Length: 118
Image (cartoon, rainbow, N blue to C red; front, side, top):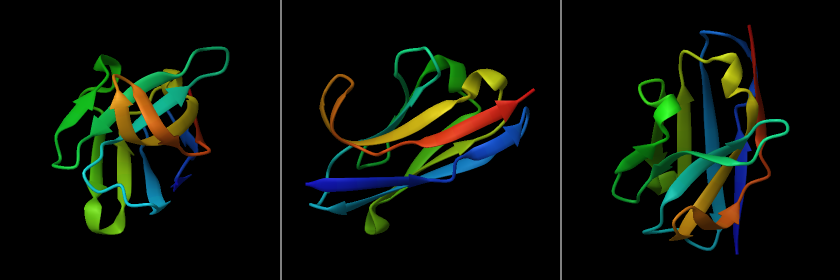
């Protein structure tokens, strides 16, 4: 089993920045992708960004140029740097690890809340 623990959420004004962290423990995730998803109130969970073991990155269009996903493989940690935040970025952000197929991941964190005020 893999446990994922997110941190770094909070309240920020529009235009501000936050950095989310996700640390994996338990079974190794060596060679696996890590990703961030988010779920806004009343909406379905949506993909935000993914980073492969080798560092390739993928983003949803609405965060391109504003968010950066990265990882430190030695520390089993992924990061999501969020800049120029908008009220529509408000959501619970979830970390995921070990891609099964498409957007299906084997392990999920408990989520960290991000609120962007206008």
